[in-house]
Image (cartoon, rainbow, N blue to C red):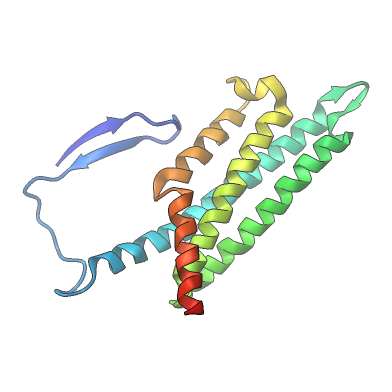
Length: 187
């Protein structure tokens, strides 16, 4: 086996490439089984698990933005008291709660072996990806110029959100899966 480090947008999570030559292997399924179906099942399970990581990151971003908005003062009062900031944070909260609910739906489908897993995983993946991306971007905005500096961790959350968004397929792929699952149910 050979390995080499890969450059990544997220400096807090190392990534690498593994090359196997002449390594022993065991089949994951029986002869005649659909390799694609097995691969999809692995992707669906990973989507549910990554959704929870994304929800956790989105919640950390929201808390960071709230804490900063309560500490930072402008015009003699905390910026958290301004309507525009309240609306930003409320929108992030709603997105986070939706993503959490969908992640729980995905976890239920995964744990119970439900045939709803492909839909539940895709919905969890899409909502968690969008929630984390939005929360990370709004966290940077609330922090202002400091959000892009090494003084604050905001940019690290933004990098992690973008890295996770691509790790097991982009949003387009997961949205297509949602569409396909709805079409299958309607047909």
